[in-house]
Image 1: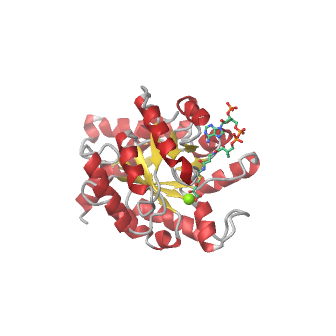
Image 2: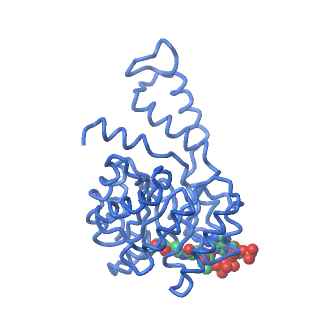
Image 3: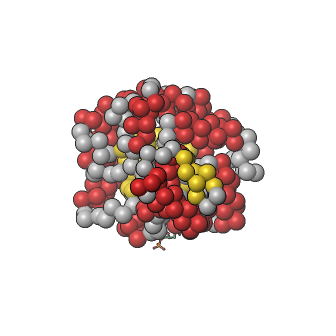
Length: 301
Ligand SMILES: CC(C)(COP(=O)(O)OP(=O)(O)OC[C@H]1O[C@@H](n2cnc3c(N)ncnc32)[C@H](O)[C@@H]1OP(=O)(O)O)[C@@H](O)C(=O)NCCC(=O)NCCSC(=O)C[C@H](O)C(=O)O
Ligand SMILES: [Mg+2]
């Protein structure tokens, strides 16, 4: 991978704020009707674990109806399908692709080959590249292969944008307990963040199951922010506001980013690699950061 290829792949990705990403079971009509009005940055409609085997067909039909109605696209709408190796995966992918969501979320990704398989199937039903791909990192093998999975996202034309942590499956597969600050999981979570960053992907922290425990939830959001996650996946509307607060961009960060963008846009700074703003050194790498931050800020709900 050359530097130029790496940069092209990273720049091709859509930039969105993803502070609060709410799961909604695709067989829960009442919750689905709330999706547009909630102030989370993104919604993941779930066809996988939240939907029982007997309800999969009905859930696909509900999704197709939901997307067919005129929907605003002020936030991202993602569909989580079942694993392609499961009895439902292929049908889910076709049905999800026909909905034209912002992205399809692939669960239980174990290796780069899973991404390549999904990309190949996606290109058969969407040749525009508009339907993006997200990957759940929630199996022991997936964590061990995190960097090669992330690198699949640097291939020409890849749709991979984001890693999503699945702490429940990780706990189930490994026997590691989640409570007490997730301390025995921390090294895996950091491996996911590191691999995501190596390929310029976003990384979203796992869910907090005890949705009535606001204090515990806020603490885990604060931890996730310090660990470098872009946002948190949520299971209940009560969790939206604390996640937005924890992962939000501060007004000062937005002011600083605007200042950097304006400074580099001035004719006297054209082509310069480094400039001085308010007595501080600012390089072009800071301009890239500032531009991304401003794009994210524009999509915060
Ligand atoms: C957890 C729940 C089953 C709780 O539901 P409920 O008992 O109905 O909660 P409330 O009575 O407090 O609900 C109050 C109102 O809020 C609406 N609501 C609840 N949840 C949602 C939601 N997710 N999105 C939108 N709206 C929601 C209710 O409809 C009530 O509205 P009203 O009747 O008008 O007052 C439920 O919250 C739920 O199903 N959550 C999502 C569960 C889910 O999707 N799980 C799968 C993803 S998590 C996962 O798998 C992570 C990963 O893979 C891993 O391995 O870790
Ligand atoms: Mg899971």
